[in-house]
Picture 1 (tube, rainbow, N blue to C red):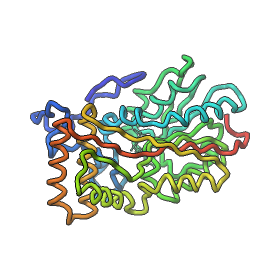
Picture 2: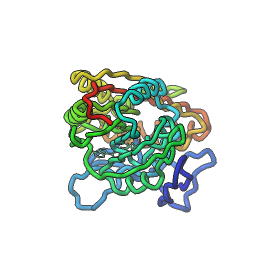
Picture 3: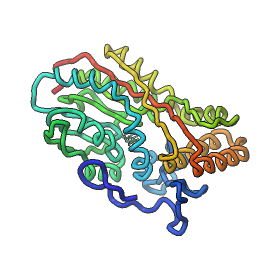
Length: 335
Ligand SMILES: C[S@@+](CC[C@H](N)C(=O)[O-])C[C@H]1O[C@@H](n2cnc3c(N)ncnc32)[C@H](O)[C@@H]1O
């Protein structure tokens, strides 16, 4: 992996996700036992598919592999709910002061949200990219967007920290809060904290690509539903919200006076997305088996069949997500 980032700089070369002597097949599907470390739909603290910062044995947050974030970025971009952009633009256009937008992207990873959104908004923008992982923040800074829709300058700074502890003060002067693929790895309390911070600062929030807990595989298989249920249960481990995140976020924001709008933002994966589909399948089935170990033998056969169909260009998958726009009542503090 060392593709040019869409805008701005480059995401630096990453260590190969598999043994260099083990070629990916011609359809882009990796060999069956090849998993990108840190890939997967929803790594969990202390659990699988993560790369440890330190091998202390202590419970620590997962690190998401930049390779995985890069692999999903085009599907994310294609899935995002464009319908939310006009109401957002109208809100931003009505903000007091014309000094430019200040946008906080929470759980930014390598910065895919900014690469998608910055060129779709007019006017100068300053993006503040938040993540707890300094390694990902480095990539986000290197491959940051440079110009807005109208050619205005876009600048970026990074902030390392826990976004689950955000306060209204931290958002003073913010024009917009964004997040992508974050809500479903938060708890109810963390989403409440986020809603308090955004509504307290009078700041709109565009919170995208939360898993909806539904997938459609074509052709279908009798095991699809069993794997889906086990995966969803895995996502809800330890109080994390998984597929409940959107409902909880809607409640948290509307209880605090915000107007919320939710639109679908599905991944639509076909033969052209075979590499992403294969990695997603491994993470999805792997989490299901972790949740229900008794599925192991049948799930392994299921996975091999699904990967074979993926390699043959015969598998289509829709992974449903939701995007949420929450328009808080302005407080006069937003820039
Ligand atoms: C699934 S990744 C999504 C990354 C990026 N937004 C994207 O769409 O490609 C989730 C990101 O949120 C970050 N993250 C999760 N919980 C966090 C927290 N409590 N504080 C700060 N960052 C967090 C992770 O480090 C990771 O970069």
